[in-house]
Image (cartoon, rainbow, N blue to C red; front, side):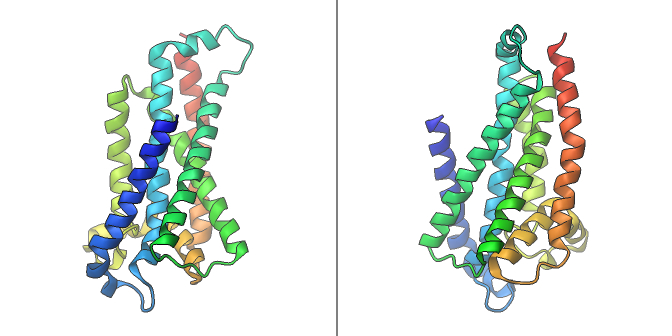
Length: 236
């Protein structure tokens, strides 16, 4: 869907440029010495992009269920899970393209990374794993929601607080204590910090294995639940 891709790309570019231009001067003093705001921001924008991009999976699955195309598939010799897998794979491809666009635009406006080739492979692996995990979570929303409008607000109230109450745009140390505890220990922050450390060449600490553990945990929970819910809903 070319219109969808173009809309996504333009939205990402606007987010990156506006956040860097509007907040860069105000937040730069709170960052570690020698780290520019754009370099700090890139990991957060990428992970936010993947999180919001995964809502497309929920909307597409809900549309399929509402418009009856799944009923046609039931007459064909195909697995029930093929519909879910197809949307997840397309989401992986779409978010991969979005990530490439974001990095390219970031490089054009001044982003610089000290990551090695191995570091970039690790970054790609973490982002792909996060995309799969979050897309399967959104697949659950797409199955349980009764309309596309319901999908939109359900996914919004999950993704918005997770991405903005994280280290995506500002260090968590400057947040109120109750919010800092949540922001520091929630999964989005662990994934952002792992990607950020690899991009900037700083010690990754526990963020690497915690990011992988969160993603694998989400997959272990979401895949069977989404598959069972979808099979149960389409078998009636």
